[in-house]
Length: 173
Ligand SMILES: [Zn+2]
Image (cartoon, rainbow, N blue to C red; front, side, top):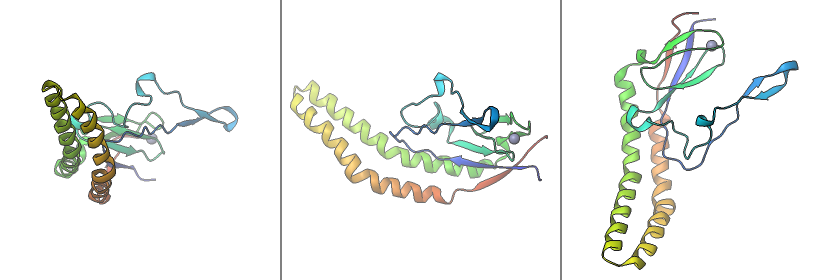
């Protein structure tokens, strides 16, 4: 057994599906028991931790014992099972920055579209053209989900498909 865990950046995309995968722990008599999740970590809109946009995508660390966690770049983590510790700042900064830039680039389009829609909605509301607001906003949503999002998503998936995986050396056992 070596002392290596795996770390991979999770270049999360804005996603309105909530991905609640229940986690299980081994209960008595080998039964699977659902792990209690603190309220603050339960389903949110999207599957991103707060601060992901500013601090960059989360890095998934797979400990050799099977334990998994998600960390921000620069965070340290000690595995609660086997007490190996990992330091994500050992990941080459330039490689991480590359992923961070891909993520930001693909996030720009939905944010820009949203900002334009909101500005237009405010403009039409102020100019008394409320009817346009009721036509414009649904149209923007339809255009986004039907026309722009599928190719956008494919491009994003392609961009992140060759993300590097790093071998993080555990600092202690
Ligand atoms: Zn471990």
